Image 1 (cartoon, rainbow, N blue to C red):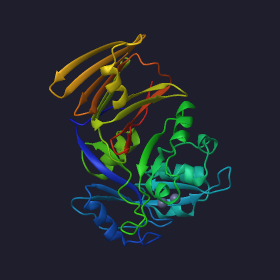
Image 2 (cartoon, rainbow, N blue to C red):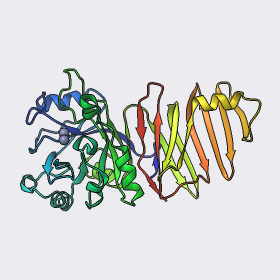
Image 3 (cartoon, helix red, strand yellow):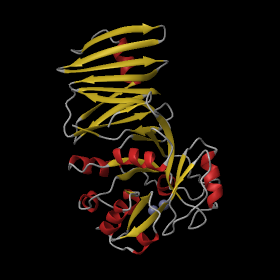
Image 4 (spheres, rainbow, N blue to C red):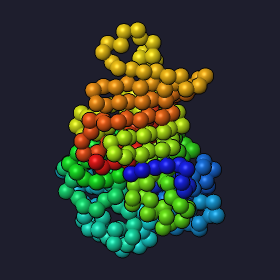
Length: 331
Ligand SMILES: [Zn+2]
Ligand SMILES: [Zn+2]
């Protein structure tokens, strides 16, 4: 999974939304308009058990989709599966969760496991399934309503078990303009050549996107043991790997490191790169961590020889605590 903003388009997409065709408060055209006004180029209407169709607008790609309740988790709750890019009513009649996923794939769509935490799903419920492209790692609606929006630990459990699955942030919007507001709080930024169904679905399948509630990645690259990450400026970057492996880089630590006289055994070099910029390199054994800071924000991180295993993924946080997540890079 490599991203580079200098190639192709960056497309803001809402993958999970409801309209008044199921339990959403706005009619389909108004939902599309809502996202159109907020910089989205792709929207998937995922009403419960119903495929909602609207006319495509010039500036906005409306992708067919549906949210399906099927099967049972260990706790006895139904799975909720999003079918993205599938315009076929026959999927609505399937009850078995694996058959639903297989049908979505055979029709050229993408299957996403919605809000695992909210559904009471544990990783045993997901590890036995095959063929789902992503799970919702952040669901804004579930967070706003019952503080069960984050499903990151299930993702890491799956990744540690070797399941290759992407993570998406979504709204699952129902209320839109009526508090508690549940829209425009979680989205994905897809890197694709063009804003059309084929290109967008291909990028989603291949994991060429990141998830966000605010911050942006501009580059992610891993090559021969060197991890390079660039952002538009964040307070913290965490590299996350299997079990307890990983490392955090945050502005508080950088400020502390750049001030202390006693380096306490750390091997540190600090170079001013320009008037308000700083490049600080820390070596810990064989691992070297180079951080570029500008205007009190981290713009770039380069890690060489990190102690990772299985996969690495990135999480960043901005000054307001908003986060973005990369997809995993499998080692
Ligand atoms: Zn749901
Ligand atoms: Zn939903």
